[in-house]
Length: 164
Image (cartoon, one colour):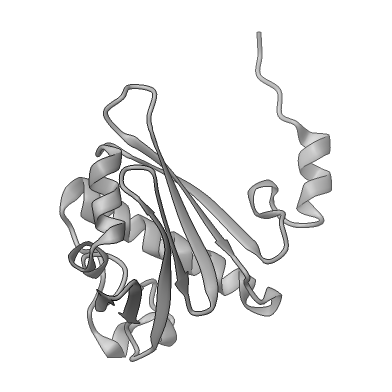
């Protein structure tokens, strides 16, 4: 049987945004890793892991992470949930970012759902793209041991480079 596309539903949603980014103030992305949930969680929940894809520095002290990102921006965010292999939730620049982890159907990889809430609507488009950059860098670091970032302040997001 030929596949059909939900054109009517998709067309109505396109006038108001995409299907998967339809909630105001919220960004949601899904990503598959070939690595198990415990390994993905370690990259979220440890300073060493976060340094490999997310921030230049992301040290945690007394349940608060001090993020330093390219371009010199800094913020402190509390760790709100830390459930090994299942979930990691933290504050980041005033937003709440939750990473839910589930084993994939094969039982060897991980399906991650990232949900970022409390976003200012005026910044949503840029923040949506920024999370794609962070998540793809995370996949490269977790599954392949590669750091995709420039680590060059003159070639950061703020100068129009696809970098985080």
